[in-house]
Image 1 (cartoon, helix red, strand yellow):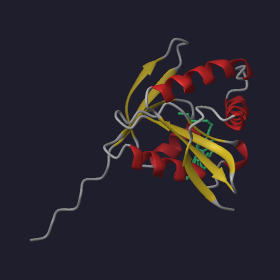
Image 2 (cartoon, rainbow, N blue to C red; image 1 turned 45 degrees about the horizontal axis):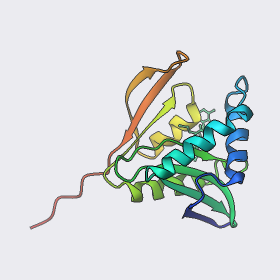
Image 3 (cartoon, protein in one colour; image 1 turned 180 degrees about the vertical axis):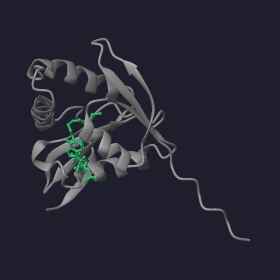
Length: 155
Ligand SMILES: CC(C)(COP(=O)(O)OP(=O)(O)OC[C@H]1O[C@@H](n2cnc3c(N)ncnc32)[C@H](O)[C@@H]1OP(=O)(O)O)[C@@H](O)C(=O)NCCC(=O)NCCS
């Protein structure tokens, strides 16, 4: 299995929309993510216009996940690995690339009950910096990664 991460010109390659619907439907079965395809397409297009990098993870050349990161603010709006490749290391490869795009630091928010995502972000060096309630009354955790301080120079 080969993993690669490439910057996408297309804000939302169709394969990624399918992966997004399937993965979120598994995580939150009570929500109709199929009905949110249009919302996702509009959001991704707006991010692309805003200069956000859309980084696509390829497994053996096939799109298998993606992360969005704004190079100026370090904001990650979307992060997703398709069900078939969760646990494969693709998520870490995507995050490595996001850190390279925004080396000064990254921020994101995540549903506080999304234990898998939070475990992944912690392993990636993110810490929880606060919480808020969203419009539906769900608790959202705010998380941030700051790059490690450089080692002191020896004289
Ligand atoms: C979040 C996501 C990108 C992480 O990618 P992944 O390939 O699943 O991540 P990994 O398997 O490398 O890491 C997940 C960690 O959670 C652990 N985990 C798995 N299921 C878990 C669960 N139900 N509860 C808690 N931890 C869990 C794994 O063991 C792993 O920890 P480890 O590295 O210490 O073993 C992916 O799961 C995903 O796309 N989920 C659906 C969309 C989503 O939630 N996106 C993030 C929104 S902010």
